[in-house]
Amino acid sequence: MPLKPLRIVLLMMAIASSLLFSCNESRTEEPVIEDFGYDYFPLEVGRTWEYEVDSVIYDPAIGGTAVDSFRTFIRESIVDTLLDNTGQVLFRLERYYRRSDTMAWQVEKVLTLSRDEQRASRTEDNLRFTKLVFPVREGKFWDGNAFFDDSRLVFVAGESIQMFKNWQYRILASGVPAAIGGMEFDDVVTVQNADNRYLNNFLELRLATEQYARGVGLISRELFIWDTSCLVCCGGNTEDGICQSLPWEERVEKGFTLRQRLIRYQ
Image 1 (tube, rainbow, N blue to C red):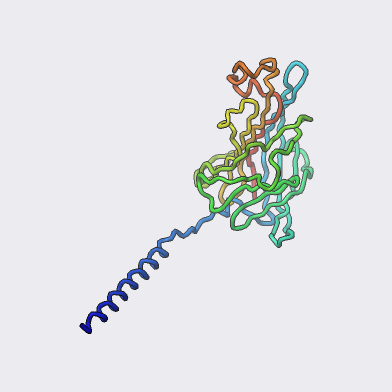
Image 2: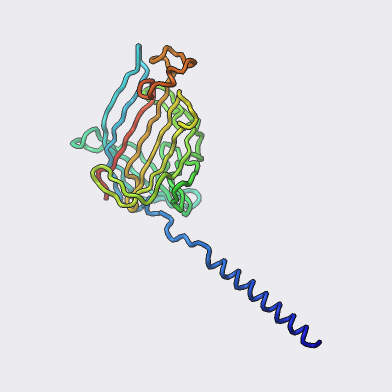
């Protein structure tokens, strides 16, 4: 009889030990993220990127749509750091442009870049964009335009357009090779900023994609911001399905296309 309490005590100690071991084992099995992908968005004073940019502007005109194509070159350099009102470090970026590679660079604007443990941001023209979220993982979604009203109007060739309507950021792929501007990169993440085709909106097209290379930063960018009223192609008739069935290239009336490719960096 006196042994029974001792057996009960030993049994309880064994159960407690088993539970403690299970808890410790579950803690050790939790995944540890070692690579957040911060170096897809490197920030250091002295870094410089040069891009070749091809643009097409669509402008409503009498009897049709005027199309203007041109090429420019963009240079972006991190020149300094500063603190915002929360104490976060901002990197001051100067952006230059020129119409040909034989012309002198001209200052276009100043903007800021920042990065913390959760996100990488770019602020220009008083608009803050969340370009990447960490850890970088394929399939991840976020609202990259959450810090401003995405219904705001942007003017293209004097025409107003809701450029940021229905944007939704998503990582399409990461850790894959890519060739851009005659250069090859071993580890690239592709971010889809917008693709509203799933909405079956045949009057507005919003396609935007960016690519970032590990240790380099932004290497390419493409934007297709197109609107139509079906006036030029179909006399304004949006009911019989003819306008909707046409390729976008045949019904676009205003907006722009932009293709930006990295050609040099340091």
